[in-house]
Amino acid sequence: MAASPRNRLRGGAARTGALLAVLLTAALAASGIAAPQAVPSKATKARDAEIVLDAASSEVDYRSGTLLFRDIVITQGTVRVQAERARATGLDFKEATWTFSGKVRISVQDGELRSDEAVVTFVADRVTRAVVRGKPAELEQRLKDGGKARGRAASLTYETAVGKVTLRGDASLSDGRSDIRGEQLVYDINAQRVQAGKASGGDDRVRIVIRPQGTP
Image (tube, rainbow, N blue to C red; front, side, top):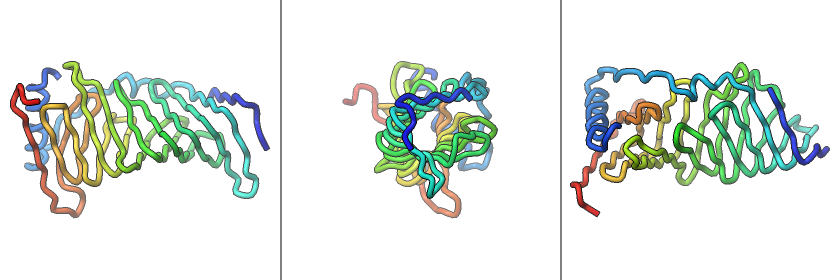
């Protein structure tokens, strides 16, 4: 059954300082000392905003009990999810899981996550988590000093409440001057800080490359 074409549901420092923060956080992780927690961002405060769904078309598959959308955008506060296709078991966001595919874009503070596929979890009418997978999945964010942070991994897990993205599987993060690589990296998008450490049960090492100023 096809619905109308439009469906709506109302429902950091300078680079040197940033580099020092990277190295300090990595050292804290290695020593087992927890890094300071970031102050909640505007995105965190806005997560209770209304959910708005906008799609070019929708279909109901009665056999599987799923809803199919094309050219879809879902927004809640500063969180925005866009994709060519989406599948859901219903429009009740009290507890729901949505699967997005095709040119997936998920907004984060001053940036976005990009991938081929993403699974977004809603709990109590809030976007709580997005697991992004691709070949690779990508992260990009504008930094306070005007540069850009770019990350790549097999998967990215975005926890909206704490504003952190966990990069897993051949993960890398760069600010244009320094690169950090590991099997698992945790990037705080609010504080613009990365923590590098071993994945659970792994013995992986972290590699940091620093380019001298003036190096192309």
